Image 1: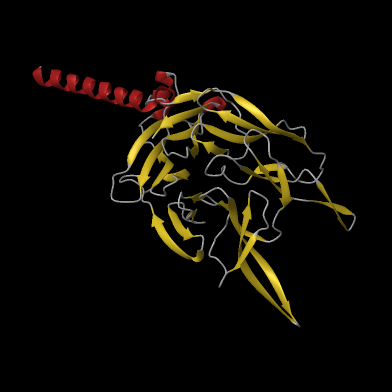
Image 2 (image 1 turned 120 degrees about the vertical axis):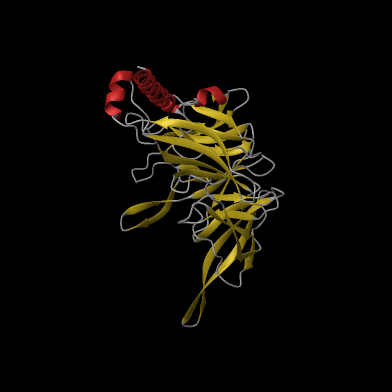
Length: 355
């Protein structure tokens, strides 16, 4: 009898432990409990740009060729429109105004691409859209248009003192019957001075200026590798042909995890990353889902802080993914002071999570 009782108790204990495991796996901590929800539901379809750790600017469209440039205050929860424009273009042009980079380091200037104006050039019966660049204060004043570079290779990158920004452009030099392609660094100034041009010894080794780029306070540039999202290169803007690699590593036990999104902090020393981790197999999953009347976890979305040095990686957030919910949250950006991560949760809700 004692042996039989022990077997029964053991079986009950196994069932209780398995049930507890299933319930725990289906209800990990929620984003809402550890982050502050913001009173905004629309940050536009393009990545927002930061003015300061408390303000960001974004382009919002209503789907009727009308677009607004809005400044959102994350502290007060208020928003204001600083620019509104409308375009009648029938070309494949979804966003006629686009933020090119974060605000200047002092927070006084925004830099945008503006293609709402049509050029006078007509080729083969088609009118081409002219892409101008627009400098603008965050309060909507001081607007100044100028022609965008025709052969942009990389940039723009703000100068540390906010007096202007640099780009890397290509040109063609003609000598008799020969044509020579050259690269130059161009510095544009916010006060309207004539840009300065410096010929480079050889073509700068920028892989693709459209990928994640972070400008450090000293003016150096961190750029993400095209194929390896854990690899960054530090580039001296005055010697862009030289690159110093910085590699981040996945946490122990997460080597096979799928990298979802990444965001590098301004100092280039920390990478914030979201990982998709497959959940452990649960025997008779469908049976348990019927008993518990809920979908069980098939994977987890995790938010990690990955240091570039010898410090240990830190797990900040872990949320379940079920067959009915493909994603639990996504990483949008990191504040300029590297203190918070901006996340998007369910139902277009946005959150600030302390790092």
